[in-house]
Every structure is written in C-alpha cells, then in structure tokens.
Image (cartoon, rainbow, N blue to C red; front, top):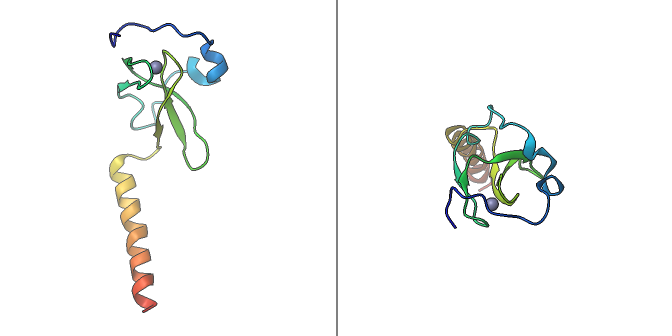
Amino acid sequence: MSATQRPEFSAPIVSICPDLSKPILPALPEADTQMVCRRCGALDLPAVAPGSGPHAYKAVCRHCGAWIKWLSTRTQAERHARNEHFYQQWLKKAQEAR
Ligand SMILES: [Zn+2]
C-alpha cells in the first residue's frame, strides 16, 4: 500500500478515538512530525488523543485509528535533563547508603 493512499477501514474512526477530529495540539513537541503507521503504512501527521497511565498523550493514525506512539509534553532534551536529574539523586542516595 502506498503511504499517500488512504486505506479503507471497517469501523468508524470515532468509535476508536473520539479526539481524531480535533486539531493537533501545537504544544506537544512531536505532534507536528509525520509518523508512519505500523498497521496501515500511512505516513501522515498523527491525531493526538489523551494518553493513559503515565502517558500524557498518544499519537493515533488518522487513517485507521491505530496507536502509533506515546507523546510527551516535554521535548527530548527536557526529558533527558529530567532523567539525568533523578538518576543523580538516586545515585547520591545509593552512595550514602553504603
Ligand atoms: Zn494507520
């Protein structure tokens, strides 16, 4: 299937994710990036829907409704800095416990 073709899907997209009709949220760092759907192969901007558990949002295929990836409200650099901060805290605590 060509990436530009819209594949047919049997279920109405609204039943999979009610937010598919909403515009992409501009605040999310990755939401304006084209992504490939692993189910239907479409290459397009994702629809953004609320995430679950620790995930803020999810990118969903506009063509078939499949989940593509989790989206963060932070940029990759911000996530890296945050991970490093908490790792250093953990490391300090682990060294003090010796
Ligand atoms: Zn798809």
